[in-house]
Amino acid sequence: MATLVLDNGAYTAKIGYSLEKVSVIPNCQFRSKTSRLKTFTANQLDEIKDPSGLFYILPFQKGYLVNWDVQRKVWDHLFGKEMFKVDFADTSIIITEPYFDFTSTQDSMNEILFEEYQFQSVLRTNAGSLSAHHYFHTKPSELCCLVVDSGFSFTHIAPYCRSKKMKEGICRINVGGKLLTNHLKEIISYRQLHVMDETHVINQVKEDVCYVSQQFYKDMEIAQMKGEENTAMIDYVLPDFTSIKKGFCKPREEMVFSGKYKTGEQILRLANERFAVPEMLFHPSDIGIQEMGIPEAIVHSIQSLPEEMQPHFYQNIVLTGGNTLFPGFKERLEAELRSLVPAHLPVSLLLPANPICYSWEGGKLLAHHPDYDEMVVTREDYDENGHCICEEKFDI
Image (cartoon, rainbow, N blue to C red):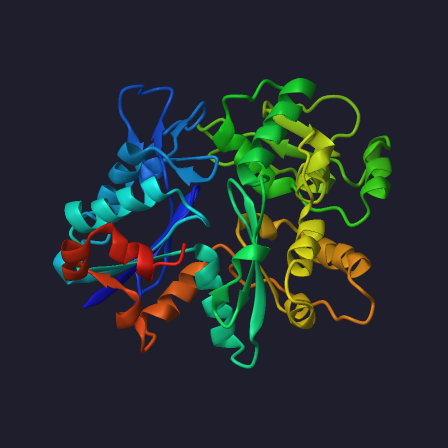
């Protein structure tokens, strides 16, 4: 019996059999400007010749699965003969969903997985629970860990003790990668070039040039300097999708500080945007979102837990999700936490080599756990008892 692990994120789906490698695939459909009528699904993105003005159709809105039609199409593509060739009758699936997911969504997911696809058995869980499983597997002596998952729609902070999540300590900040990209689009559109339709391109810009500042006000001053003294300034060459397929940063020695470029490339000049955008993870109030930043939320979450456990959580903080890949993220979070946490408590953060696939790897380990068969709901169980057996077994 094969086990398929699917970490079904709002931006990418991390999928693969438990004995194989993971594939990271966009969890959405696209329409391009040139062929309006044709819809591209998931990794067919690579077939689009001109991804400017790319139109996204996302199954998730505000972090929850709402558009089942799109999700079905993506799953059909993933499970189908082009990709994973799933033999449903002989396959068990581990699939993730957000914390405290709506009951209606959970029921729909049961129905689709058991009745439409007819998987042999299903385990529904949270991505954070898989990350915690991964962490406890690598550090068996630890009893507690705090999973910080900063993804596309949200940043979740979830404490785990002996692989059980402690619901009273779970926090959510409504800042994720989608908000950062949208904010960067707005800033660039306001300052230099109308890019409100260019989500795909600007997301690439964000990943290429943004970083987390260690001293925000100092970097702000540098970013206001003229000419070569401004070390924060960078020129980004936008793709034209004919000769330049993917945008890139101009090397420092090729930058023209006064006057225009002779070459015909389209240039974005970015300075304080590079660190002002990721800053929202630490201070959402900068753009009027009245919430705590990540460091405060971590402390808030840990302080809601029993006092004797708190030191253990500060020492076992795991960073997962795409936003943790910003250069300087871990260092800044560590510095801010250090100033908030009592001096006698050590603070230790782990940034895995691949924070995006960390929870998928946890699912892979879980699939080979000796008690795995006790955790799942089989199709016979479901046919006999319906949704209630899933409610009992899955702790969402």
